Length: 534
Image (cartoon, rainbow, N blue to C red; front, side):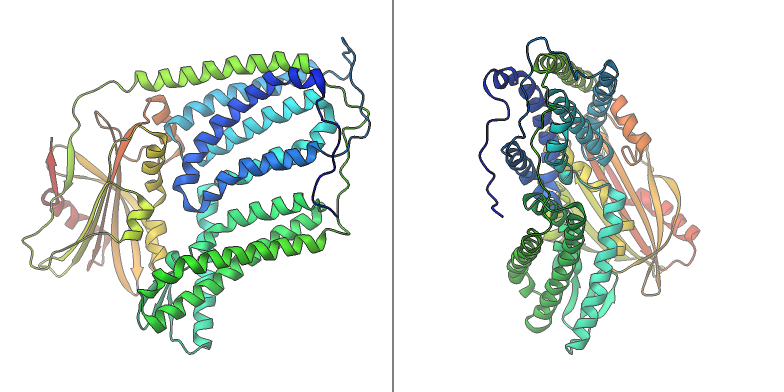
């Protein structure tokens, strides 16, 4: 089978191509805005860097299908109204347009909300499929549906699903790697997603970040299934094989990097990390390509042309495109007006930061590791730990993101909300026992700080963790935990909040048996731990 599409008559010859300019231009504007918004997430979230390639792959797949030899469709005559969509067809188009306006407003305030990312993408895909149906009927819809819907592989997964899948696979990867190390005479102990060897602790986030490329593997599997035109059951098999290949190769990668750390020291991981990652990625792609190539001969789907029933109604499509184009301008202008109207100065905001107990002889102030800085992209950050006279141990992490105006900056600030004790502390080997009721503690400076409380087990030692997220507009404060829930995200949109800064304060205390004692101790010490400035 040749992978080069056969030449054929253009799918929109002559005058039809000229009439299609307006619909294509309107669709292009909708798609360009969507790609611009998702592009910020593709740039910030490492596991979604592949998203930048997906629009080009979609165009390639559309081109391949457009060059498929036609089955002899007829060109409609002037005034031909056969097969025109019924009036009820325009109801879903109107519903999509209304939903687009609401999605656009919500997404502007919450640029990393996976719900609005999916809604926006499905709406644009829906618009496009409606245009295709009007232009060429069911034949064109069957022909072009997959290349258009293929774009959805670039939309970030829902956060809950992504965290569950990634964390579960990382733990499984860690367990298998520990067993392999034992078989190769390298003593190792698993602590959550961390492997302890004689030289130190190897984090799977460092040694095996490639397991986060499962989304890219899904994209490659679906793309190759389309390129080789495999039947549906073989495409499903190829996707399943892709997940197995990604996981298997990352077990190999983790094992090799841990062996390097055991034999050459922890510092050697840095020089081996990227070459190993690239090698594993190329190996995974080659395995998938070979599997798809071997399936191609007896499992190819015969691609049909437009068919004799094709009747295009480009004049109707032009009118629809004109209406949706005007709607796009109205929605974008209205969204911008709404947020600008709420960004007027409201007075100076109160600034605060930790007041480190430098007089305590046991106090140690430490910079956060480079990999943490690279992942969280904060503007200010520090960590300190000390021992209190009563023997309890305290550790504090403080991170600050300054107010921003660019879309990339807003995504960077919002990224921090996906990093909380539930994810991060369990990833380093601690076991979360339960989350306690939140509390609000007075700082003695005229304001209070709301904390979420957690109880963790670190190798038999109880750790009480207090975690606070506070957002702040460029001028004036905003409620704590804004955008942490669906209701909070809706409130942010209705309040016109988008260019905000953020700070997180995480306090871990060990040495207390009872949660009430740890909370009472923090309430006593908090006024001394916080300093304010104008």
